[in-house]
Image (cartoon, rainbow, N blue to C red; front, side, top):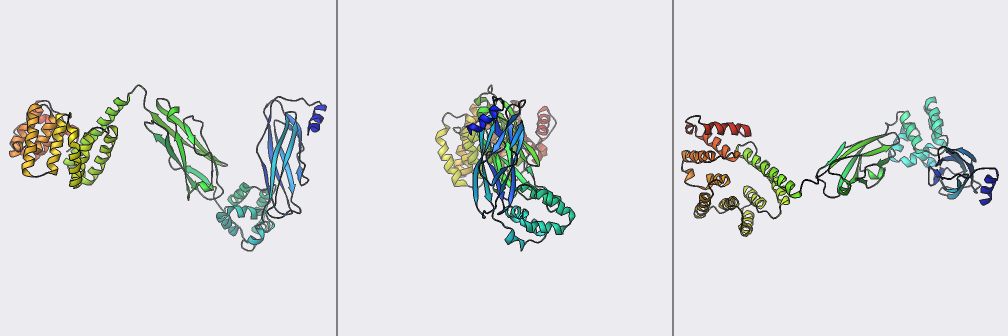
Length: 492
């Protein structure tokens, strides 16, 4: 080998700084027993302005380098292998030796003598339609049969157009994509295409590495070979190549990972490209990371407020009979679960859960929860303590206990008369307030005069006036405010 390199140098070839690369790592070829087949690979010079010159050799007598000499920055090397005397299933390996002014290289090759399916298939497949069905059910076998004499005879019978197409596509070395082109050009199958089930992946508030899913839909049938890639630092793909085995039916689920460490504050935009021999599509990825300037505590309070408002809106709809109980329970449960995650030590989401259990007639479970929560009341606000007492009356409905709990809430209210939440609970607990609609209306007016603007109390006022219009003796400022604010809330 050294002698060959010296021969090139003595012919005044200049050794070039750089290297050669090849289109394949292994030159593979499939050939029928007793026949010959051709293959090819490409040599690339690293310096585009300086062409590579050299020879390609191999020691195996069966392997012929049809392109012995090359001169260029991108050169196609064609080789030919003769399988005379070899049997089905035989496999041979060797090396191409490339000696050039860029140095000396070796490229391994492997030739497999394929098992001929033609003999067994010829009796079963005698038309182009039969071949199409074979390709649909057993693509690998169909490709082998395509490069056989029996199939060539079938194409002759199909007419001149089919025969000429076959001659052009079957020439040269074993090529699966040529079989696909043949079937499509003959109208036997549509081109295999791929699309994204969802054109975009959106992830909000990324706080750690997140696993998402890119769903690829397959339209049609045929060999599957997809390349998946991304150039965005914050995106990582589980694999870059997708084949038929990655699909379940017509769907492939490809994991895509989003790295929180690689994200900047705010929105991050990226793309994943899925490509195949005849097309491609893009899937956009938007990942949002919380801005550094916004503290975790501030964001937690913001989200707590969001879900508390949502709970209020749901209650208003239930009270106005705009939502059924089952739907209300489902949506409330979602909010309560979110609040519980935001503050696992808070008693309030747990009290919401207890009330939810009571609406579901899970009385014993709710009662057990309330007993477990009682020690947590120490240090809680008067409104939370009053809410707890109200919930206990829904569990323990004995008259004597209800009176005792109501009296306790009234006592708390006398000490905190500005607390509208306790006033709202008094509407359901106080016997004195509920002795007449007039007294109840007076109590509500007192809250509004104190400046209360809670939609919960305004709703109670409107429901009361609807039930007893005689209470409406005029349009004084409070009445006008009731109807005005209630319309703003759109909760009739």
